Length: 234
Ligand code: NDP
Image 1 (cartoon, rainbow, N blue to C red):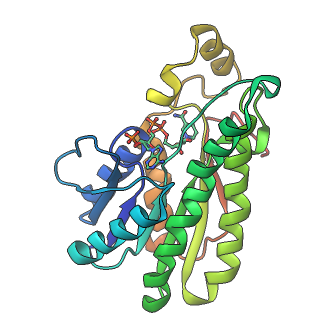
Image 2: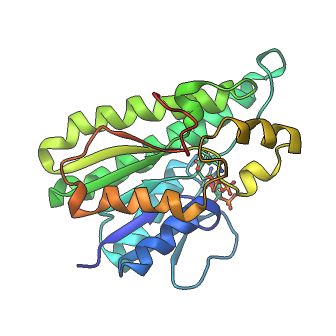
């Protein structure tokens, strides 16, 4: 049966690959955007996840078009890298607000419909650096580690209602987010990846659609690495 799926930040990058994978399965897919064009075949809802009112309006629009969100993929995220000594408080809180509080805003709103339906899937896109740490990314890594505690708390709060909550932790994926890294930094990262290459966005999407599938009904509170072995053991 076609499900109502929302992917935040689904207008490009990893989020778009996830959106396409759900659409290919026949699901009803909505993606958030912040003014950019929305790829064909997807329902675009204007939404900045740092704004609670926009989140609420986006969910109302999806409910009207597709019904309540049954599968939430919290994927929207930003980086603002610099070493601690140079990081302003604004740089820290802005990244936390988008990556972690943003996930809280959409999960809270999505839980309403999921609780009523007594079924739901929440999937949070974290990062390998959340648990490994990363020099120059204290804000980003803290936000991504925070998602693990958040998702596991949701797993405990909502499990009895048939709502699962899991984390996917990608490694290095070639998107606009990583395009800004220097060639030296990219080489350094690749040297640490046993598989020896970057991930394709579709490989992240595969883990996400699996977690939303019936086959994954008994998986909750898990952190699934899709990182070519970069974070092994984390
Ligand atoms: P991109 O920079 O290519 O895309 C980011 C997406 O998030 C865009 O759709 C963007 O929307 C959206 N977004 C950012 N801030 C907000 C906001 N405040 N409200 C709504 N949407 C927002 O990144 P990726 O596709 O590479 O990353 C997707 C996710 O995967 C992120 O959470 C990232 O941290 C994570 N990740 C990425 C890795 C990588 O190597 N690329 C590795 C590990 C994790 P807009 O188009 O409007 O800017």
